[in-house]
Image 1 (cartoon, rainbow, N blue to C red):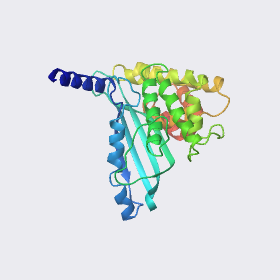
Image 2 (cartoon, helix red, strand yellow):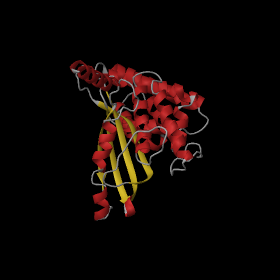
Image 3 (cartoon, one colour):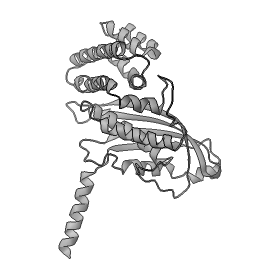
Image 4 (cartoon, rainbow, N blue to C red):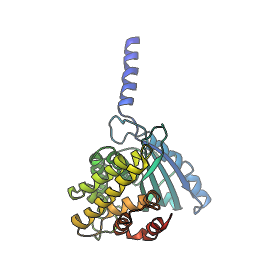
Length: 301
C-alpha cells in the first residue's frame, strides 16, 4: 500500500512538471464605474482571473524557460443582474538574453479588447475548454494563445504556429456562437480578431514572422553583448520589413500594425540619433501613425 502511495505521488509530480504553466499574469480590475452591489459581485474577479491564467497549462506541453510576464488591466462597467461590460488592456513581455540573469524585458504584445460582455457572480468557476465558448475564459484563452504564440515565435522561426491555430479555433467558436467582437467579416486593415488570426495563420505572412524572430535573436538578445552590432542588425531587419511590405503586401496589415504598436517606443529609443537616416524612412513607411516619434528620434543628438 505504501508503495502504491509513493508511486501515485511520483506520477502526480511528474505530470505536473511535464505540463507546466506558461504565463505569469498580474491582473488589476478597475471597478470605479460600478455601483456598490455590482462591485461586491466582482470582488474576487482579479484573483479568479490570475488563478485561472497562472495555474493553467494552455499548451499541454512541458514549458521550457521562464514564464511569460503579462500585465492585464480591466475596466468594468454595467453590473445590473450580474451582467458586465469590460475593456481590457494587455501587455506581454519577452525576457531578453544577456550576461546577467535579469538582462531586461521587451514589450512583445500591446493589445486592447473593448468589446467584452459577460455574466459573473461570487463563486463563479472558470474552466479551460476548447470545445465550448465561455464569455470569460474563452476570451482570456484567445489572448493567452496569442501571447504564447508570439513568445514562441521570438525563440524559433514560426514556433508559435500551433498556438495561433488554437487562437483561430477559439475565434471560430465565438463566431459560430455569434459573440460580439467575433464577426467573420471585416474590411482589409481593420483591426479585428478575424483579420489578426487570419494573417497569423496565413503562409503569406510567414516571412514577416521570421523577421520578428530575427528582430529578437539577432537584435535585442545581442544588445547587452554588442550594442552597435545589434543596432545595425535591427536596422537591416527593419529594411527587410519595408521590403516585405512593398513587395509582398497588397494592402494594409493588422499584423504589421500590431508589431509596430507594440514596438514604436522601443524602436525610437534604439535609433535615437542614429546616423543612417534610411532606417527612419523605413520606419515611417512601415508605421506612418508614429511619424512624429521617429522624426524626434532622428533629430536627437
